[in-house]
Length: 284
Image 1: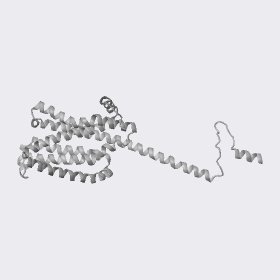
Image 2: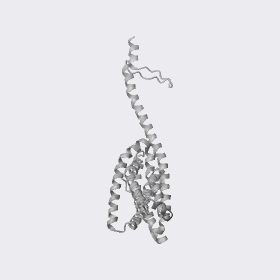
Image 3: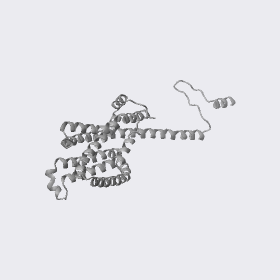
Image 4: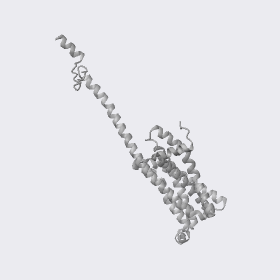
């Protein structure tokens, strides 16, 4: 059962463990990043499709594409874990957000200079931004369910039981709510400061860049620690298997002999013999 931990106690525990702190950074960064991207994208989506029918039709296609992408990533994720390991799998989600985020915010900020190039594709800068934002949301959500969530749960495996239980409790108390509400708080602050969401878009892009880079740094640090702990686990298991293998070997050696012989304690000058040897000498 998860221990009941208050907010201050959870914060102290998070600060006391680098491993749990890096894991908490992953959780918070994902929550804030998704919130920043999704709200900004939906504001552009409503501008492109002001009609409720067009908006609903697009969202229906978006949901279908998200389901297909998630199912496909579920099938591919096992290959990624087996072939490339935990570290690569943990970095895919922030990498997807970084690449698509740069494309999305670039189309919003530099739409006018890019208009002639985009026009050759039969798109407007706004529509192109909507499509890139949709791809960003589709791939980030599918990566979350197929890679991010499994990586987060796998990260607890090498920890001792006390750290594992307290770490999960601390992340549930502090990091999950902070990740969900952090993006909204940042957006509210930007809107109050710059007057509207459109005016604050460049700064939101900068905040997203900083958060994703911190996410990647935490994933890299956590990968190093995770790998070291797994190696320690494997060494302990090998030692246990080696110790278990010696027991039958010693038993077999005893069975092959004519009886167990008490070892001589030569260091203490004890040259006592076993009872069987004593009786043999008396009979002689």
